[in-house]
Image 1: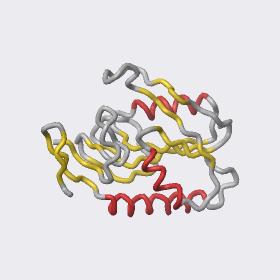
Image 2: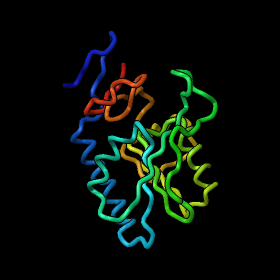
Image 3: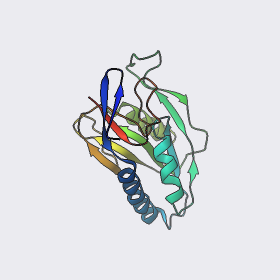
Length: 179
C-alpha cells in the first residue's frame, strides 16, 4: 500500500519496512563492530515513545553486552503546544557515571531533545555519549551530528514506525510522508 487516506489528506509511503529493516541491520553491524570488545558495557538509551520501534528492531541484532535505560523527554508538556525547554517525564534509572551511553532516537530535526539529553548526560559524567538516529533531517538546523544515521531525510512531516502525529499513526509499519 503506497498511499493511505488520513483526515482528508494522503499519507504516501516514504520508506517500506524491508528497506528500514535492512538499514537497521547495517547499523547493528556497525555497533557490533564498535562494541564487540568493550570492557564496559554501554548503556542503550531509547527515547520513548518514538524510538521504541527502532530499538525493538535493533536489539535482537546486537551481539555485545549492554544495559538499557529508557528515557522520556517532553517538549510538549501541555498538549500540542511546544515548550521552550524540554523536560524529563522519565529520567535516568541507572548509574551512568563513567559509562558509555548510546542514545537511540527516532528522528533528529531541531535537536532540542538530544541537546537536552546530552547536557543531562554530561552532568552525570558519562564516559562518552553517542547518538544513533533512524532519521536525520539534515536541513532542519540542528547543530548536533549523530554518530549513526539510518536515513538522511528531507524536510517532510513523517509518520509511522514510531513517529506520530498528535499521538496517532505510530502503528504504521512503514514510514509515510504527510502531504
